[in-house]
Image 1 (cartoon, rainbow, N blue to C red):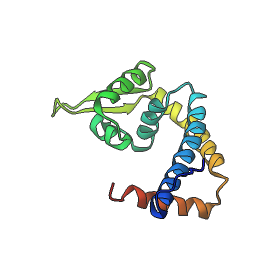
Image 2 (cartoon, helix red, strand yellow):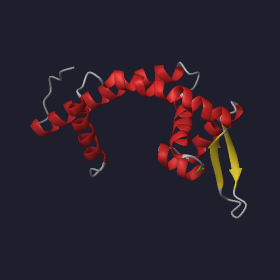
Image 3 (cartoon, rainbow, N blue to C red):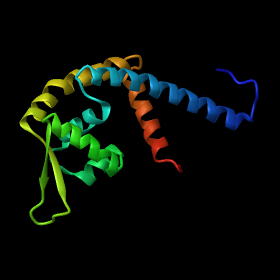
Image 4 (cartoon, rainbow, N blue to C red):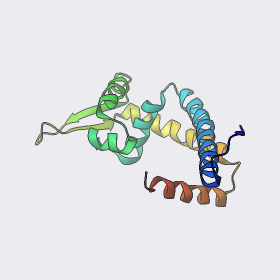
Length: 149
């Protein structure tokens, strides 16, 4: 949407860039969530299974850090994924405060079954960009993520 009011070249460019970034994220995220939903999972549940599938057993705090979520919201997600039988909590014998989570055999089987399908879907969504464009966009987003925010 074009705005009729101008705020100056620097601000107008920043606002236009933000809008494009926001719309692109919304579009890709919607497609990603549709893919995840087809597996009978929510996005947070899938994120837990994916992280543990790639990284193995993690402390809950490490998992929260990797997924950029708070411990409070993670507790509910972990409870739900545990009820589905995909993960288990392991209590550290030496440090009662430390709780690990890992995939159960059922969770590992699910991860092995669905991750490649999801990765193929993401590849398809991003195929509007060439490999070189995806690399360039990745580098730009990485730079933006390290910016002075």
